[in-house]
Length: 81
Figure 1 (cartoon, rainbow, N blue to C red):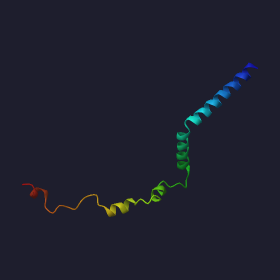
Figure 2 (figure 1 turned 90 degrees about the vertical axis):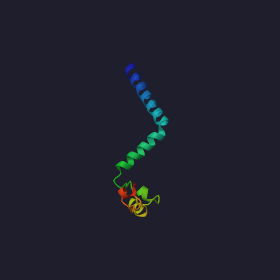
Figure 3 (figure 1 turned 135 degrees about the vertical axis):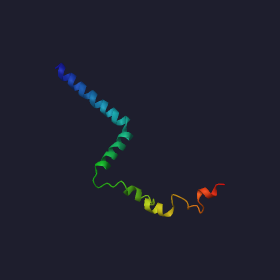
Figure 4 (figure 1 turned 135 degrees about the horizontal axis):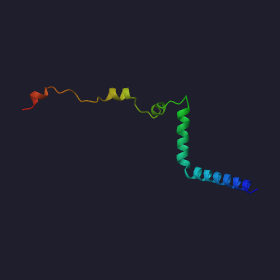
């Protein structure tokens, strides 16, 4: 009878410990579970959230603003005196 009581007490302690961790770490665990669900979803497109925020695409941003300014009209060697 003592072994059964010890086993029941051990299971209750493990269960209460698990519930305590779930309550204490709820925000972190929810974010992690959502990330895992998105990663395992074959229909999830990570780029779709970027497009829905009205951000320009990389090609459109590159077409609007060049990375380098206009080329200098004089060669660098002739401009240094």
